[in-house]
Length: 376
Image 1: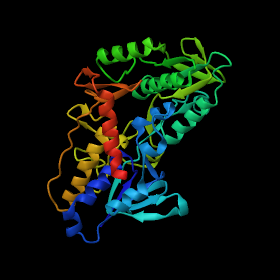
Image 2: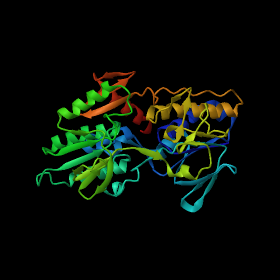
Image 3: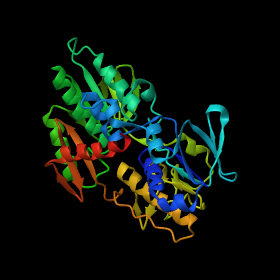
Image 4: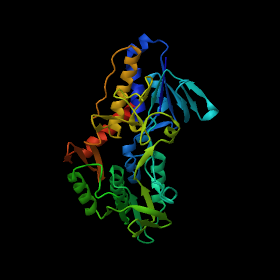
């Protein structure tokens, strides 16, 4: 009996971890094994990527060795890219050597990719913190700037969670270097943190950034990116020395090849987190589109972990011919919650419409350190 976990982010790691802890699975199926496949060799704690810019963390502190983790839980790890899935033959095909690996149960947890919305030259001329490699490249680009030569302009495109956190860390970076620069954060929606329905958290974060000299441009959409200049759809232009792109994600490109039910490109799952119409294929994390009674699961680490736990349980229940467990989302599109770092070792916690700033940064870092301990 073989379970393949495709994609080793928060959701995939949780699936493998939960399956490995279920002694009844090992006892019932002596030949059961877990194979984890990912094109990267390390899990990346994405929420901490902006702190790479300020130097608060180094890559090794916010990433975990997947080979080591797999060995610890008794699983196999394969560092490769899956290029296609044959659901009828129950096999995944990998890039290196064109291997075909058979499965009895498959969990797809391949996450999302950065999108540039087809804006001319945006991808080619922008930096990103979406991946750990991208965050390190962005830090290296900042380090090469001569801040004494002239006034430097830094443009951050996208004022969601990642965008505001990047601005906070840029402010700390400049303070530590005793340098100055104009920072502009650009958002096409009417407010900062547009995915949060209440204005209190947006107003709090906006004031925090404005008080530290950040220019906030809302209701401003990028039309084109050229060398040293951004053109907006309203006709205005913004000069820049470096762009950091934090606006938007899209489904992993592998999903385009899969002829299965989807919602706007994301895999449509049933109440038990199975890909709709399948009994042996599950999807969790950003890969999955889950909705229950009009409530949509958010694309965040908390939901990915919780979905991973339930998917693992339902694999075991399927094997044992037991009633499956329905998934209940908590960190939803309609009622999101999050830690939001603001730089200067400060953060806010948004929960049930409330903004809490007391000890929020310490708590955020505690959650981060506790999670990363599993890779030690």
